[in-house]
Image (tube, rainbow over all chains, first blue to last red; front, side, top):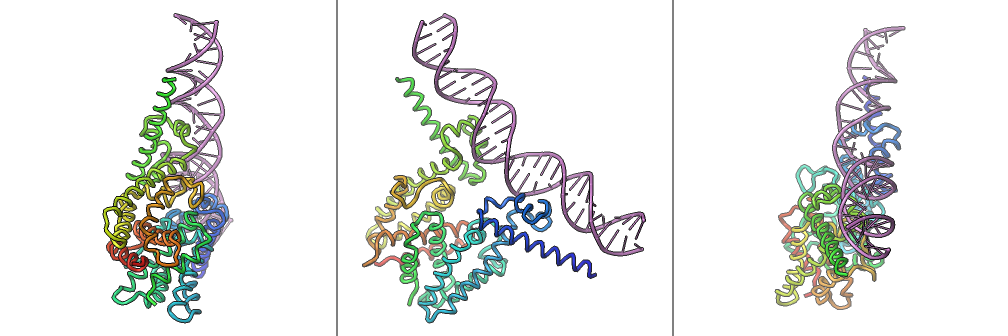
Length: 192
Length: 192
DNA sequence: GCTCGATTCTAGCACTGCTAGACAATCGAG
DNA sequence: CTCGATTGTCTAGCAGTGCTAGAATCGAGC
């Protein structure tokens, strides 16, 4: 049985390689540059190998999105746990979110802009995505205000952050005022 | 000279046809379905004709975006002018914005999600885009609050609306609570 | 050392955006 | 009214895309 186990390990290793390479390529040159040919060449296998791991390009994007969600959740929790008091936590959360989006644009796109074939806002939403939302909820729930559902508040705050992140990167908003817009958002939306 | 004028008119007419057809096709089947071949077939000309009007597909998207911006500006002004008082105006504005995004998803994408080769937040931003932002500013500037720059406030509010619009359509947010999220946004962000 | 199933590759499909060069229609000059 | 030049349009093709059928190769177990 040890041979099969080794093969399975190697297969899992190669799958990680595919996802990591796709992510790297996407961050370097954008998702448009992540073609099955280029990806195959970089991992030093032929194209069809990709299809023995994933149904198609969409699923590869989805895998990158899941990886990113786990990282984002960790980054958000790290930022908030270092802050004292609700206000500092929310500010740190907002900054950490926008920072993650700016530093990992391709991963961010995989999560929230592209179609990775993942279910959102469902019971069958993958765990990492639920957890990333939970990380938002942990800090935002406490400042939702009386009579406002924490989940609903979190969704709204998240949407606002998402709007800032995407419009800024798409050069629809001038980048220099990001900090002031973030402060405005925190000051007004959170009940402190 | 009249012959040349007629030709010019016909050429302009055909250009409108291209833009209208691209928009129609995008709304019906999504932008992915708007290929140069399909578009050419629908307007009953060959592909190269498209390139005698536009540099490429990107510019066609840009043309749809400009058309959409003019319409959105009109829709926003129509909604706000029918409302009494700042609060009602902002609520009407937010609803009209999200309604436009939901009813014209392809046009909305052309404006804010896709690359139409247009300049934003610049002095050389096309007039319709500036005017759409101006339409937002007209109603939002009056509720920015003391010491908050109206433009900055408008950008922030707009980003929040954009986040709601895109995340909802990408099925990242459950659609049924849209109205409540909108109310929350208006209640908290606007200084009334 | 050989066989046979699993794995991987080559080669190909139908599609994409875009363009060079052939062709036809139209115009102005003689 | 004819003829060359200028437009305008089309056919055919390039290099690329995601994806897959079937051939070729590898290696595990006898």
